[in-house]
Image (tube, rainbow, N blue to C red; front, side, top):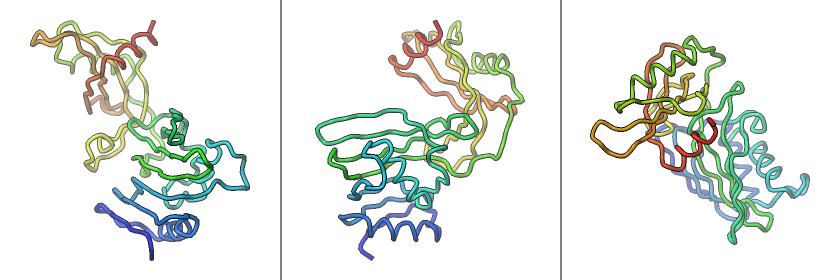
Length: 232
């Protein structure tokens, strides 16, 4: 065994081990791996683009994740991932994928794949969810979620901006703590904090089944502007 592995808490499972062996053989350099919760949060490698696919880096990246789907525990990557961002630099190109389940995005989930611009895949990194509900429909309406979110924010004259979004929410993607995945409404709220600080904005996540407020996330100024423009 020539690869090094760091495992956090959850051991890898047998199909992952087989995929890991195949990846070791495919890589021109020693693998560097870090597992978190049974998933490869970081993979360092040097794997040439497949000659069986077009040279486009998007096709190559998704093809790689498909070839090693047992390692990443994503049964059908092409259906479970969507391209969020593509960055080109002198060091190569990075593609960042978001995760979708039953047509709804998984908040905070991301998987990035980096290539060197010379037809070699060098790294993958990120955090995503594998244990997702088989199905779920909201019991809380959008209007009810708006009221819950506005009531949760400690600010003067809070108001909703942008359109609420139904998504999958797992606090563990933000905190690292083991948490259940819930169907939730994301409601963006702005207002003036009671302490007199400048106006702020928050993404409030409301459980779509029981109406509980799951999380409040302060938004940066650029995020606030983005959602304000989208609501106009």
